[in-house]
Image 1 (cartoon, rainbow, N blue to C red):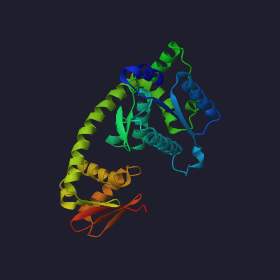
Image 2 (cartoon, helix red, strand yellow):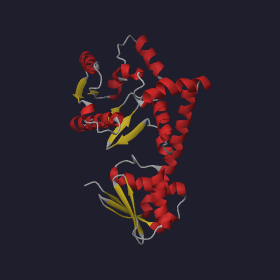
Image 3 (spheres, rainbow, N blue to C red):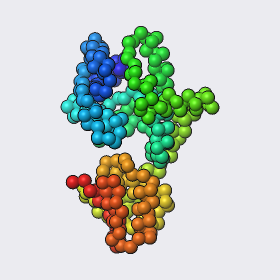
Length: 294
């Protein structure tokens, strides 16, 4: 990806900064950091790196998620320091398919099954994925043909992580059933993305029309308006309200949404449902969702 941006640098007047986050999880991680640093020195590209031992920050939830959080915190810090407008990530088509299979197995909804997008926003940062339509094998073939050195993460071949089990065990089985499974799943994902974009836009419009008040710690929605919604739109409006408060909908499951629906239709006024880091209260006219994080 970096070499292709170098080809475009003059034509599009690009300022390139290569950033590398060392997770400290593998013995060869320092060697890989030095490899990227030396490459940038030879290519005359500005280089910024940071190293943190992810295990020191791991609190028993998900090592992969902990690593991702630290990595994106680093990206945001560099973004503020350099005023760079876009973050380019080298995710390819195989990464996307693996991500969606992981989410499918974990029980994701429509939003999760669209995977990550070619272009998205993360806390004010524009994220682009220029290689998303390429297979990993095509990337490797191109590197070899161009005689560009590269490193391979050896942990990709260990089935310790959930993603690796998908890559090493599940995908080969699916390819036995359909040799073109990656392309087939990719086409499904693209269709889901278009469907979700339409549904999300309509859900956000409904959220704005039903919102009666909102602060940093709470949002209130019109109960009668919620009752009139199609169940699918109801779930999306609640998810948007939760996202407004906590920044994401992690750990919010379908059973939580069903309980909120039961709260509205079947339980008496002043009843409360407790969700991870949130409390949902049924008032006379409003459903109030409040953050419990101090």
